[in-house]
Image (cartoon, rainbow, N blue to C red):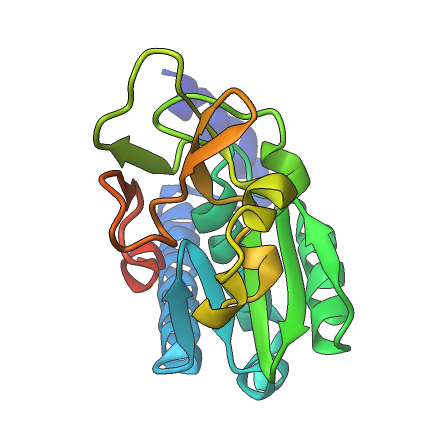
Amino acid sequence: MKARRALDCLAPLGIDAETLSAVAHNLAMENGLLRQAVREALDGKVDEVLGSLAIDPRAFRRMRAEVQRRFLTAAIGWIAGGDYAPRADAVRAFGIALAEGRTHTLAGVIGWTWKGGLWLAREPQAVKEATGNPFDGRWRIGGPVEEGQEIRALGEDGLNALPDWRDLGFPRRALLALPAVWEGENLVSAPLLEPESPYNATLLRPRFDNWLG
């Protein structure tokens, strides 16, 4: 009934059900082509690393504006979640900053250039107070978590308790927001950075290339 009333209102403008159907079809076709363009632009150029994304900055800068915006919107959703995507103009400003080599944050995601790669990771400040399992809605911690232990971000204190973290070859910013097991102020384990840990962390996300749709 509501649809019929709407069509009656649009009829004087020359818009009927057939016209609306054609518009919807064209939009769906355009959206599909853009999704394909994003996938082609990213093919072999994006790596998932500890729940973060690393992309060839040259490939990023070569993307058309709308392709770049769609990639960043998908990356932000994959990394930070959230019920709503950030505004298109904010995403474009984020992309411009990253293309210029500037560190920038948006919607709980931080982007920066490190050793020739463009990185997108969870912003440490966004998970500073986060606790629980799953952690940050992204990580499921398994293993002997005992009463009195807590799951929270690794942070600066946790990273300082891992003297060999630099040998892992990962950027510091990508590690600070990772989940860790704590007992009070004592780090029990950073399961993603300690292969021999009795704890484990599973990312509750599909692969990013599948997330793109």
